[in-house]
Image (spheres, rainbow over the protein chains, first blue to last red):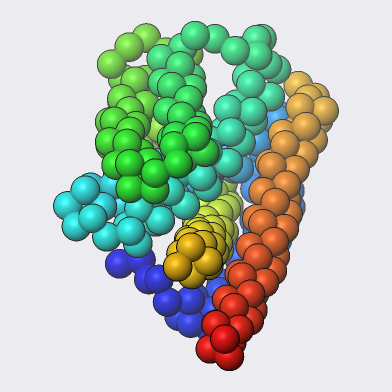
Length: 237
Length: 53
């Protein structure tokens, strides 16, 4: 359950930042010094470790948007809305990374920056929905109304997650199917798999840190909004 | 295949995006913290003034 009280996050946040920093440093070292170079694609395949980790975080973020949105509509507790909003914003950052690193990997391997492939297109749709979510926040003044609209949009956006995941199986796609979930690592060596899991772990810690900081920021913004209203009320009486 | 340029560009994108977001988050936190402190002190001053009046 998201917590409005900052004392808990203040206690665990510095530890999470330290662990996350060392995790990311370890992941970078493993990518370049431990994981072997792929035979066909060569060195450019090393984009895989942060591309897949970012995609994992994007999935996690929008799944949490779904959880926060359903919980908000159910309970009308603003903490859940804050949780969904923060997850969405951090999710946009990681989906942007996925959509930018993908073409940088695709150009030398597929020969083109972009293809209207089912996986790529459905990921772009998710990004557009997530950006629309943030635009509603920016342009709708009524806090409750914006939270309601965004909760509905968050649920619609999360419906895209299984479509993205299964798009490579349902339609003809140039994007590889999820090899990590295949038996035996789908052709990845144990060193490659370990590097990927360290990278995913480090990104997950970074995600928790970012969402926590973003939630604290949102709580402070709401406090400033309430203080402004209180000052206005006192002046008018 | 030697495609080091694409690898460097991809890593630059990852870290530029993350550092930009962290920098933006940090500056927003500072601004809102200052805002809350300013509003709290203003509210305190106005309460004192109304009590003395």
